[in-house]
Amino acid sequence: MEFIKKFAKELSVFGLVLVVFLGLFLYRQATFKDYKTIKKSELTQMVEDKKDFVVVLGDSSEATVQGYQSIMTQYTTKNRKTPFYYLDTKDFDNLEKYVEKTFKTNVTYPTTFIIKKGEVVAQKEGSLQYYSLYDFIKENFS
Image (cartoon, rainbow, N blue to C red; front, side, top):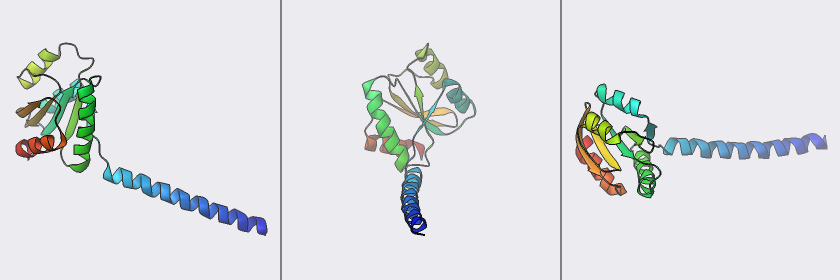
């Protein structure tokens, strides 16, 4: 009988710990959102389908882009409704030709594009700080 009481007590403690971890996991899922990394073919298809979205092009091996990625995560977490994508240009062949053909512009990287109905309505070159990114998207996407 003593064994059953001890086992039940340990089981209830384990259950409590499990509920706490499950609650923290669900909280994280509910409050955290990350940008989506896409491939060149997906980006081309989105432009052809005339979708509205924000996309950042940059080489993930560069320090400026790595810092900008944390800003992008912060933005997408706080602004969940904005469709936000990232295209890693690290292994691209003929990147300039692709950007010229798809977006009809020449840029330096990283670059943030705002696309509406498949057309570039605004672009900003370089790594942005959170409020610069927020204002840029608010002015041009909303």
